[in-house]
Amino acid sequence: QVPLQESGGGSVQAGGSLRLSCAASGYISSGTCMGWLRQAPGKEREGVAGIYTGISTPVSISYYADSVKGRFTISQDNAENTVYLQMNSLKVEDTAMYYCAADLECHGTTIRTMYSSSWGQGTRVTVSA
Image (cartoon, rainbow, N blue to C red; front, side):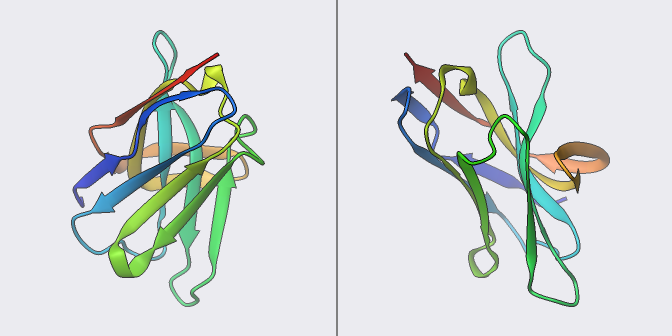
């Protein structure tokens, strides 16, 4: 498991933007899905976005939860071993602790952890009205 460190969280007003970064202390393997999960107080953890890079091709596939489609964009910089989450048009309901995670199960709008997944300590995002 590769250690992951999130950054970029903070407080913003509704409608604003934030960019989260996830630095992996090691090579991000192709053929796996990395992404972001979040957990709001009193709620279950939910998958937000995932990005899968193929083994034999450099093409990446992105996955998003319905709640963030069109507002959030996930990207990956393989050279820097970093995954980003650009969050635009933020809503109060986006307030949560955001966790970067590796080796996720990603398909359709499903982004969730598996037994082999690892994740960082999280970065807090607070969106005020």
